[in-house]
Image (cartoon, rainbow, N blue to C red; front, side, top):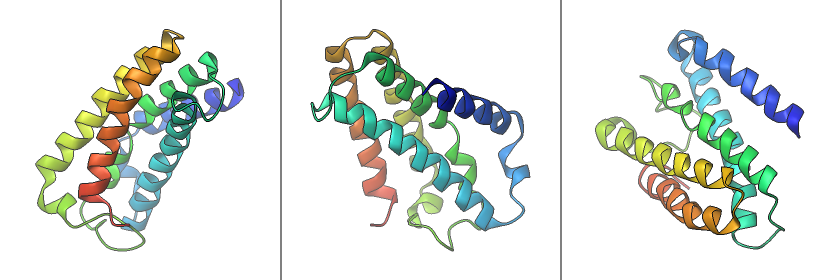
Length: 150
């Protein structure tokens, strides 16, 4: 598990050190990038949710590690919503580009809630994780409801 987190952290450091738009030769590359970041983030968020909802036993180390990954990844996908990335293999709604300020505010809200979740997970307290998970989950859902097609 620690190896996966280390690899994710190293990959994230590389990604953050290079301006994301410079990475994208084509709009499809940006779409793949944002989808990959959101998929990995969702996977780790689901792990925390399973513990917070009692579907799996609480493991403080796994919760803290997953919350840290989610917090780091929450900063990445937004570069992948540049010009021309509204078409192609995507469930992104047109409102992302027509309501850019609202979309960016939703992203910031999610990042703030995820940071609270990460801080809660670092305490090792299931009650703290449960309390913070709801706000983070709601911020994700709000953005999905407004900006993602099913």
